[in-house]
Image 1 (tube, helix red, strand yellow):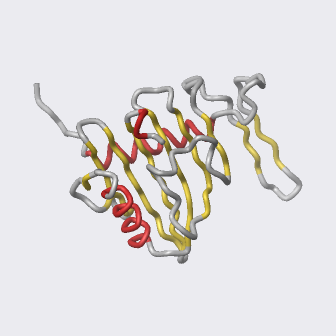
Image 2: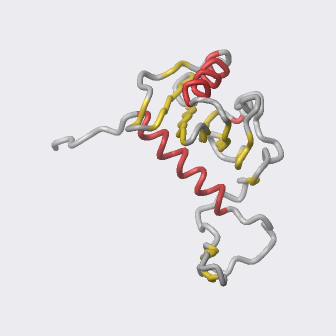
Length: 176
């Protein structure tokens, strides 16, 4: 059998972080509400289109998410919010193995400063940086602790604002 390619840790972590954010975005704000299962779209008089996607069939029952704030129980010690940053969204599921947490934020600092802040915060908790600093034009850094705890941070800087995405897969006892 010929091996065509091997996923690199940074690429895998970016994919996992993207999937976690998609999961967080699809979790209904009202978990008791009924999902319609169909997408709908409407157009306003200004031509703006609003789309409502169906609830994700793969959303874990233990996942909680928040927009504009940290979700209740978010592991702030593991993933602290960078001082001066604004939380765009967050999600957390401690019922899975490993536990998963995601954070999206933005700040008026260079991408290098964001990566540096989180590198120091994660290394202080025993994470080791994996070689590699970018995925294409995106600043991206992966961290590993032990054999199965991972964190990825990806930062896009546009117009003096850095938007960062952090995804973590850690042992439940680490997610405090």
